[in-house]
Length: 122
Ligand SMILES: [Zn+2]
View 1: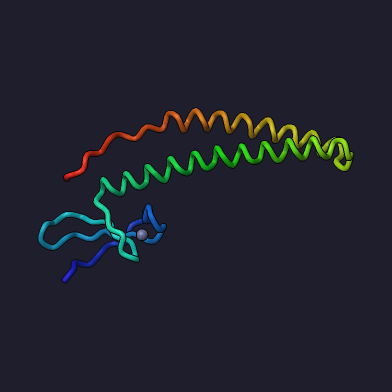
View 2: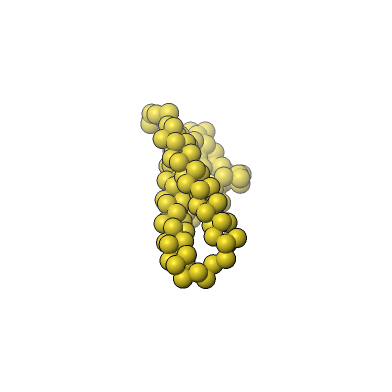
């Protein structure tokens, strides 16, 4: 029979489901378990969250690149077609510059994101 579990405000690294903290009745080792059964030690939870952070940072860098390409394409296509007003074009240019700076800054942040090694075998 399992001990009652305590819900916590951290989601599962694999499925984003709600996590509860369970204490193994015999070993007394806390296990983080989601609603569908993924189970983690605290080190595994940290590693899972570190992977999520890494993936999120690179995903955002990629999204900024996509936006840069699309805004540049819009400017190049629409300037010739003159369907955008001067104010619109200026707003797009400012946003493009802003996105480029954000992407470059985030790229540097992502390269500095270095989690510590956590050895297995608690
Ligand atoms: Zn899960």
